Image 1 (cartoon, rainbow, N blue to C red):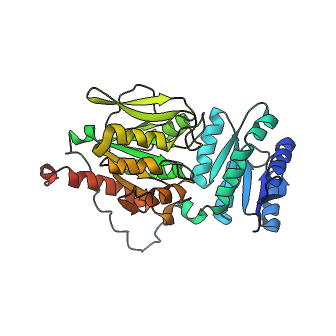
Image 2: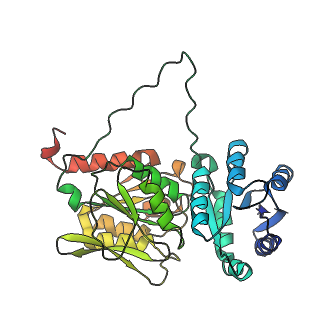
Image 3: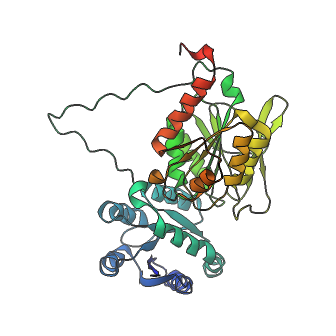
Length: 367
């Protein structure tokens, strides 16, 4: 089997050396080049044709975001960002994911050498995943503007809303699980939902220090309110709650209300937060009032628990292979018999709204 060829791009000689050592220690990959800035990297990519690059954010002459933007326009390829664990680093990393980076590694601000060595399994796993990712599906360039004299595009069909569902929105909860590629996939789902939709509870595999920035970013884009979940808070319609990085999120019942439970604990399926933990609570606590969505990601986290959701009466969908960055988690959910429908990403949110509308009963026949 051919080895995955990697080019490392980082202005720190120490980081380049460490990443090269970590990569070359793996039997299935090799570092074919290490560049100190994007200009050197550009020539290496032309000459060496790597399968994956790791890319620092802050570099001289051209920062990683500018380089990534140019790269994804001119030569789309799998990129794993290596960003500093700071608030600014989190914002920039989220921008990189929007531009098409597959995933990221958060290197520590101090103790970089020891920190990277401790992260070596994470780094190499993400390189492996990136090497298999669907880049063309991950990029969503804006449509070209119509030329002069061209007919205007047809108006979009009216979207279903939940404005007349009333009490149903307080009973139903939408549960979303996602990993690699999921930050953008989740964004696409949430941006379609109306302000009065049922509550949404989300586990996205992310490390500590990034989920609050991610939630704030989504909150500025969506009709619903989006926030990082807090332990004990009431789960309300028209709101989305994201599991904090490094903590598990579940749902509990408190009288007539649902509340978020945010707790530490051992990783489940190697993840914290884990989709399995969230979906198990959905099956146990919410039952037939739950709707489950499994989005792009590597591995099987959440597949068994989604089957428990379906067995408890929940309605569950999975993202289809063609629109996934990585099809692992949806495929495992499908294979587990956990899924009612398999849909392209762009149709999932509207399908869930339509399902809610049709299952709400005759009272909505005039909506």
